[in-house]
Image (cartoon, rainbow, N blue to C red; front, side, top):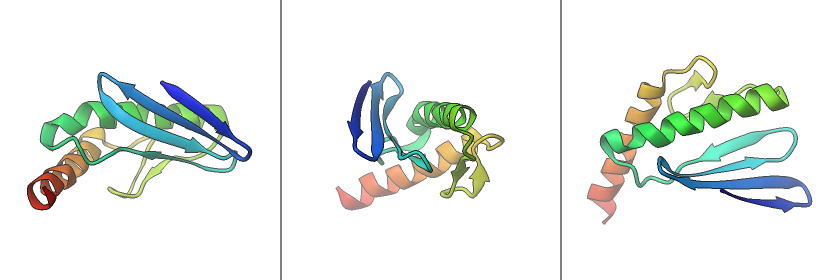
Amino acid sequence: MTTEEFPYSLTLWRDGPAGHLQLDYDGDSAHIEIPYRYPGSEALPITAEAYRLGRMVEEECGLEGYDYEVEQPVRTGDIDVAAARLGGIARWAQETLT
């Protein structure tokens, strides 16, 4: 895990067994990005980690997380639905753009 502080924000890069994600936090909001390199079921571990991290940010910062890709709250959202969406987009990108 690598973190970098900027004058107005904090960025955390997580590169672990589940995959890579980036969390950006500026005090008023936060967002998590996952690259489209996890096709199909390979998306489940990194999605689960992103949701776990999102829930921690909610608890620590008092923010409410929302996954706009699948239109569901992070706290009660279905990780399988989110992973299926990420895995589908990643599969399409790999098949179409490479």
